[in-house]
Amino acid sequence: MTLYGIPNCNTVKKAQDWLKSNQIAYEFHDFKKKGVTPEKLDQWFDAFGWEKVINRNGLTFKKLSKEEQVQLNTPEQVSSYLQANTSAIKRPILERDGKAILIGFSAEDYALLKAH
Image (cartoon, rainbow, N blue to C red; front, side, top):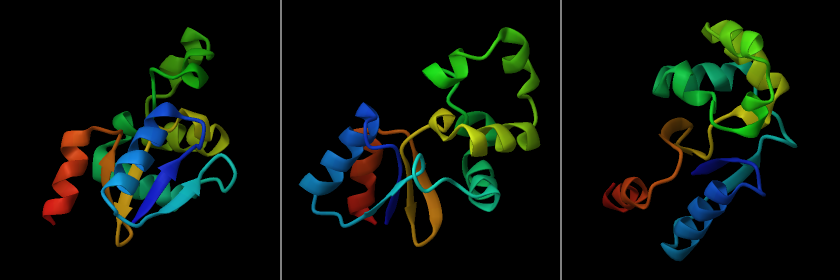
């Protein structure tokens, strides 16, 4: 499994703590340091919808002017924006065998991992 996020995010820390306490091995991909490819964003858009991959509640997005926020209204524009501003990606994103399976963190959703 691969967990994508940034290390100082509380939600990412909750996901990491849950995975560790449930002895589920994972690799951590810090997309602030390692970035994210357009292809990876496309996979996440396919899995969750591009509207869900952009974190509209985060500080990075909220720092944009209303005009800039409104212009982020197509997958292509959001992909370009997220490549340049990885902090605006909803996190964490969990992949199993290279396929995105969960976005965000909820203990209930993660508990389903143990069933599979």
